[in-house]
Image (cartoon, rainbow, N blue to C red; front, top):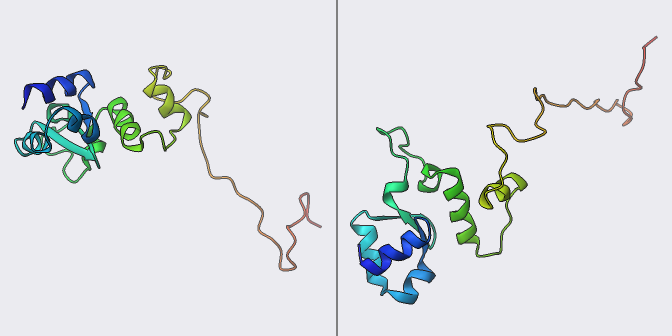
Length: 134
């Protein structure tokens, strides 16, 4: 990979956008890095260092490249792609800023989740009355 492009990727924590790269290197440099396997396009106009993809013995076959990234890097890739025109969920945003809660489960997640059931309307268009039936 071109040394200037390599430094851009390193400064970006393994990620670079086409717009940033083409400010300092010609377009063919980015194309050559992708062709040689040093960079991988994970989203339109967003590239990451190939060694950052999780590719364990074919486990990820068929998974889009962005889905094979560490979640934090995947969130950063999405933010780079959106260029300030998108939004993240509260937990994804916390992860991007490095303030995500520890653990696998979001804070305030219930122990058990279930589907809520709403009463079905009666034939007359009204919901059934709650309480004991005669």
